[in-house]
View 1 (cartoon, helix red, strand yellow):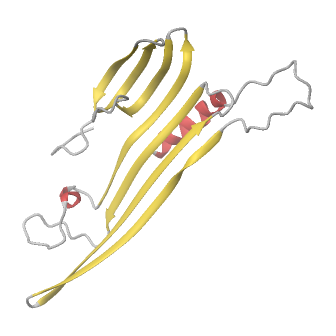
View 2 (cartoon, helix red, strand yellow; view 1 turned 45 degrees about the horizontal axis):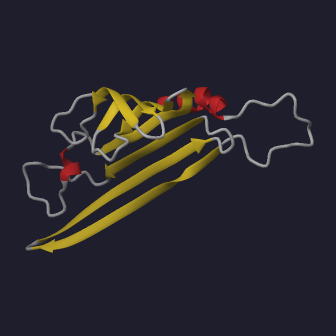
Length: 180
């Protein structure tokens, strides 16, 4: 995951910076940066405890979210979007054959840590006539469909009609025994 992120940043960030205009004088410097990065990082530590007859039960988990969007405010020709989450069961209470009052669906994973990449896509805006946007990578349906997929989506059309064409493989985050 980290390797993919580094490759995307190294190879696609130059696409986001607008080309220098050779005819403009140095006094006409742009007020806008060549690209902007917006987003957030969120981390949480959760400690829970309960008293059962004859024993005290505890649970410790860590959660993290990372969201960032890279765009060029002047050109708007390309954008990159990323959203991923991670969690770790710090105390390892994952026994599927015993009762644990704080168990949840994340305790069913084979490892104590898990993560999901919900979005990681490059968007090219207005790359061709009648093509308003071309997206490549992991993405969700653009018309509020609850579908995540790895592939491409192309918005074509004009003022009166806009059509989105999808192609790729569906992503199933929460299926039992999902294999990548």
